[in-house]
Amino acid sequence: MSISTIEWEDGRIKLIDQTLLPNEFKQIFCDDLPTIWEAIKSLRVRGAPAIGIAGALGAVLGIWNSTATTYDTFASELKSATDYLATSRPTAVNLFWALDRMTKTAEENRDLPISELKKTLLAEAEEIIEEDKAMCRAIGQHGMALLNENDTILTHCNAGGLATSDYGTALAVMFSAHEAGKQIQVYADETRPLLQGARLTTWELMQAGIDVTLICDNMAAQVMKEGKIQCVIVGADRIAANGDTANKIGTYNVAILAQAHEIPFYVAAPTSTLDYALASGDEIPIEQRSAEEVTEGFGKVTAPKGVKVYSPAFDVTPASLVTAIITEKGVAHPPFTESLGALKDE
Ligand code: MRU
Image 1 (spheres, rainbow, N blue to C red):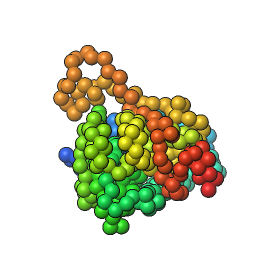
Image 2 (image 1 turned 90 degrees about the vertical axis):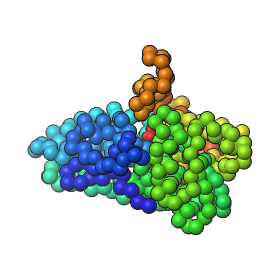
Image 3 (image 1 turned 60 degrees about the vertical axis):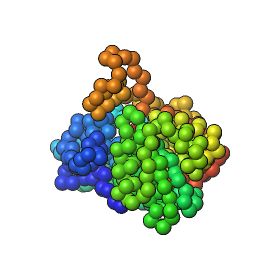
Image 4 (image 1 turned 135 degrees about the vertical axis):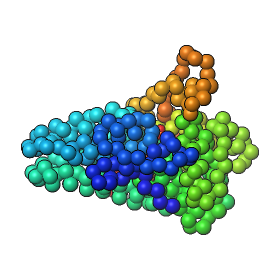
């Protein structure tokens, strides 16, 4: 299966509007910075690696029509674009990783004519996309070795092709196993409040011909108790140096349940999701979302008007609950400070 989640086309960004799925498959164009910013903020494009790609392409969009004649003017236009994009969503480190990479590329090529520099930045963003594709395939290969014939996997949120350039991280493991002829089944958590599991994960897995069953988030304990789940695989938005993992709200609950039922809990993520600058997950910024997403998500009012709402979009699963982290460079095992540290130097 191959979905082009987000790409550059003729001077603008083309992306699948994920807020419309699964009812409507529609690709939209972002012609300017506010439009791509809004697309990230409102989750038209979402998932840590895809947000990183949106940032990189957004940086290109920010300077594409620049009329700067000096590098300093060009660099300050690029900086205002990257600063602006950095305010869209705080948790996925891939966004900041990609924006930094674009800034460094500009600096390293500062002697080029501006017209060439623009093309160099576009080439860098496209390189990020190609690397992401390769990383996802490698994650799939490393991860599928952890699966046994007839395993049933529980996943939370969407870490599939839609969350990356085209193949996913957690779902890459499932796609790879399925493509290799392994019999697997998947349970997908619905993932309140924005239903990425119900709307996107089941859609992707069904398209790939993988046996998937949708459950509400609060059913996971019972499903585990019934012995239906052999492992959990989720994606990540940011992993601290010690292995503490930020992912979609509710992931921590699933990790606790997995430990209580002695089920392995795997995180699948590219190394661009590792934030070595943070010693532990306590330092990971957690995005807060609007009350309306909880009280009237998808149009229907489901809570009294004026009720107080608290809606963190992510939680941090302590490394002690993580069995292994599947990256494109291989599978890291505890203690993660050592195993993830070793990946940095590869
Ligand atoms: O709010 P979202 O939909 O962007 O959250 C997405 C997730 O939490 C994913 O699990 C994570 O970004 C990994 S995507 C490969």
